[in-house]
Image 1 (tube, rainbow, N blue to C red):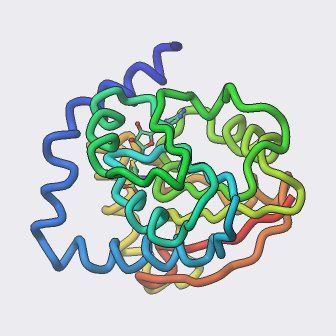
Image 2: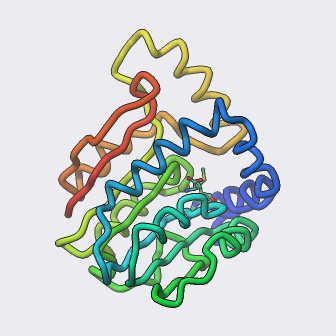
Length: 212
Ligand SMILES: C[S@@+](CC[C@H](N)C(=O)[O-])C[C@H]1O[C@@H](n2cnc3c(N)ncnc32)[C@H](O)[C@@H]1O
C-alpha cells in the first residue's frame, strides 16, 4: 500500500469508534441518512444482482441494500480494517444473499471486468487518494447493462453557497482527508454517461447515476 493510501486507511481506522456516533446528532445524521437511503433506492435492485458498495466504511447503507435484495450477491469493500470489521457486524444473517465484506483497494480492484450489475459509492470518491484511477476501475468492473450511483460532495454552482462551501472544504481537507473541491463529475463523464439525480445542501451534495 502506498503512503497516501496508508494515511487514509489509518485516518479511518482511528475514526471508526466515532464514525457512527454522528448518528446520535440528528441535525447532522438525518439529512445524511435520507440522502444515503435515496441513493440506495436509485440502485433499482433486481433479483440476482451483484452489488458493490465501494468504501463501505462502517457499512451504514448495507442494511438498506439488503432490504431491497431478495437474492443475489452483495460485496462491501474498504481499505480500513477497523471500518471493515465494524461493517461485518451490520449485515446480519441472510442465507438467500451471498455477502462479503472485504479489504479491496478500488484503485486496483481484484474483481474481473463487467463483474457487478450495480455499484454504489457514498462519500467515498472525495477520500480516495487517486480517484481518477478508482473511477476507471469502477467503469471496468461494472457490467455495461448496469449502473453506478455516486453520492458525494462538491463545489456548488450557486455563488451564494460559496461562503459556506470554502470553510467546509478546508476543514474537511484538514480533518478528514476529504477533498470536496475535486472535479468528480468531470472525471466520471470521461468514463460514463452521467445523469444528475438530485442536489442537496445548496448544491454541495449531489447524487449521480452513471452508465458505461
Ligand atoms: C467518508 S467514508 C464513507 C463511508 C461510507 N460509504 C458512508 O457513506 O458512511 C470513506 C471511506 O472510503 C474508504 N476508502 C478510501 N480510499 C479507498 C480505496 N482506495 N479503496 C476502498 N475504500 C477506500 C475509507 O477507508 C472510508 O471508510
